[in-house]
Image (cartoon, rainbow, N blue to C red):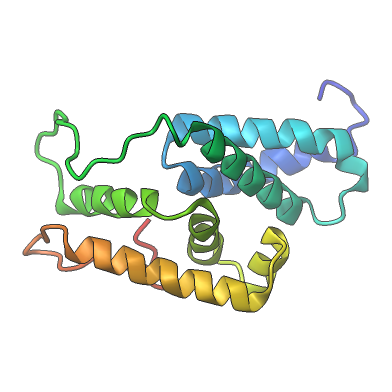
Length: 177
């Protein structure tokens, strides 16, 4: 990246890094893992930068693929439990509690389903672009989104709700993430 002749890569990264980090964060659920995911994707894309026609779409696809590959490698180590570990939380607003419940529900989704939900509702991409990014049909995107949202709603219904705020469900244009 130190080259003066990077073909606009540096400018692209400076302009789009927050968007990439946001997508990565929603894929991984962790700020540290999101940083690693974006950095790894940028390293891979830099090698092919001059041949990439749609850099954001290509980077999103690389990030999704890297995340799914990493998830497959490490899923045996991750233990999902019904109870959250105790955390030191003082005077936390209901929104934080709801967000944590949503993250717990998101972690139960299969990686490709989570990718559809993130690309469709967090990155706010149209179904056709999500399908192109993931290399599947628009129908597959629709069915994964529908099933994923249904699973999220079901998981969130089992969570205790805050009396002040009601249920949390992700809807297009009103991101609960």
